[in-house]
Length: 326
Image (tube, rainbow, N blue to C red; front, top):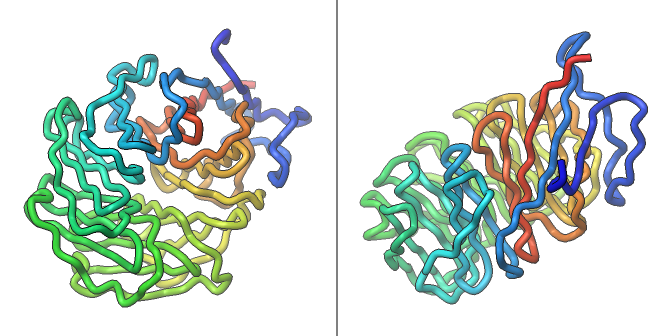
């Protein structure tokens, strides 16, 4: 445990110093004999630039992107991170890989980068000058990117060509999720939520009544998804986004990122080192002490028990869920 910078034991009665604005930790129990602890270890990214997104294809292979064209790669679960030559200078906001070799990165000034060799080389696919915030692909050909002024771009040839889709909004879109080629969701400013069931030929608008910006969205299948944003907002849908129900995140910090491994296991991260976790689909959220105080931007799963978080100042955290028998 000599490299651990935070340990959250989910056992009744344990008092810990928590980030302001988040609840006390609560016990997570799956049966009468089992609880869990979350080990949070700080990894050495080797940089101090802000990191804005992170993606893992499995427990070994991951990438993080951020300011000044930064792309980092690990092939050993984050024990070592190495810079990759992106060929870009723009702030990079979003990253998505469909396997350990093939991925895309998006960022400011319409930056789009593509690799087929795990990031050893990156091809420039940039489109226009609009800042892009997030990207998602469902296979090696079909993908989408979102950004400023309601921009939604679509490609059907792996990014060689990108075409705009009609989002029916002019607000900035921050997050994107596509569980398959037909069904997708985008979220953004003023509580905007868009959904499509035809690959983006038509986007159907919906707006959260609070009007607070939504910064990320994650669907685990075509029915079940979550969105997170300003004021500790967490929304959940189990009917493909027709109806969204607010969940109590037990936190009022800005939540920049949210990810789910399945219908039960999820993490949300945000300002002041905030890490909130759920093991029951968001019905109950608990606070994990991250050991850092800066802004945490995004979270990625390697498997159900291993997660990575990227944030400001080059911070990368590995979160490991461990079963504890009482």
